[in-house]
Image (cartoon, rainbow, N blue to C red; front, side, top):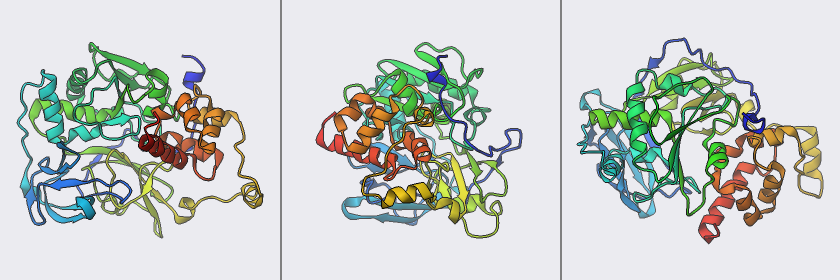
Length: 418
């Protein structure tokens, strides 16, 4: 591999013991929430008090009724809180083990249209993210490429290979199914030496070192198939691909996902298998140190304070309030009192924080200056906020670079500049 392609930063991280047994834990409550900024408008298929099987349809999206959100566990609908325009605020379930599992009718998924219908109707379609902009893809969208992430280099992240243990056949079936959704290639991103799937026509294996940010899909997409409005590119986690294969084989949804618990407030790093939308307090009970703590859904770099495991997240980070608070530094304090904005200082760490093959400083300067056209030219449309979390950590920039990127992408999308 070329030097740039191996670029990244080794981060301090207490990773879970990969040889330790993994506990299965279904929390008593689970919930899907949305902030007002997300504006997820839905059509409910259930009402408060209804008992639903695991995998049963709960909601559809109003802008795309084919896209279903399914129950993460057998349960009773405890709360369905909607805002103006039927925008989702919170959907909460209480665990009801006797409610069983929902059996989806799966047709001949060798037909791409039938395969799409199965993924849309089961809820697994929401495992895809489409770039530019990071939305769930529209039902009729055909990507130029799909990146399957069997590599995760966030500090303390669970090993995707460990997540696939016992699901190798389902993973291979899921990969083969993805080739029927894409106009170009499916890229399987995995560490050197890993062999997670047999050779499949239409699947290209990419091997990257296990240094951050090489395990982020935005870095891989920018390198191998940059996204444009006329060339949509999707990404999906390897475990979600295994879930697709298992759905096609059995008609049922995978019940759990592998999640890592870590952070300074945790007694010790550990791995659990839990349902999506799980209650973070239930997952960490008895496994955090005494005293106040903040629970993040996600890693210490890009996680958000939450009570519930957010869709797509596979980490829970327990932090002390002091660790979670923005850090102070005398040099930054002096710059804040200066009349000019905080400068971005070129360094090797900044180059490595963006993976090494992006012109880091020109891109960050375009971002800071709000130069949308330059940022697009340098690769902004392949990235999301998570892809700049390490740059935030390295530069201590204010405002945060990840927030600037999110604002820029929203502006570009609204103005149709791309």
